[in-house]
Image (cartoon, rainbow, N blue to C red; front, side):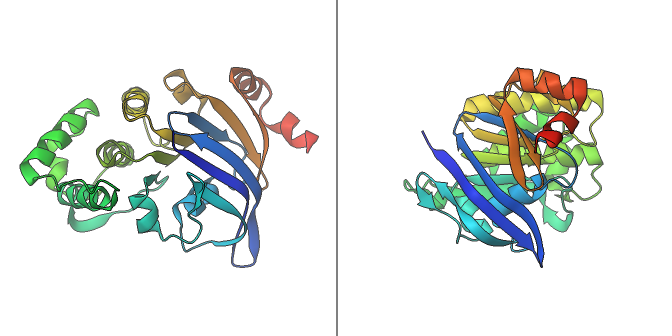
Length: 253
């Protein structure tokens, strides 16, 4: 089973330290949820895992199946099986969502050890329509520019659609539940759970909304503060967070 290991990871943006020794191990087929106060480094962690050039890694390592990926560019990490769903997805006008996803799918497939054959446009379109229907996304979005004219909720659904079609080994979702009304949250969360189980995917979710955990059952919940993971546990940790907030955990540190 593939394993993603983060060991004592440290990172800065400019002269500002953000990650201060994050250690975490995620196996494929596991769901991890990271919670914590604003500014604790949660979003930065996911960006660094994906290789964002915005940040500088100053210590530690990231390994995928015991092989370091710390020097890989974002595209090479995507080809290795990593995926990032953005908190604020970007608009890419003029690039049709359907064409983009088919080309991305074929590029990732060609980089795999077994070198998957490219999927034809018609076949990919059929698969895309099926996933769009499950997520209640208008089929016209297939030919529209990436996130062009999408509402906040539609952008988040588009991120899940991309994850479903690109089939990563590990996916990182940054507040995938933000901007969703309760009906859209139910659709997205339920589909996330189905996709994760179907693809036996390792999943790291950042969330401030415990509601999503009614539909997605995490294996481990982590609390992050000041660039570190300061506590972890199961359902009992979530209940404590709901009752007392993060303050008792922060006081211990």
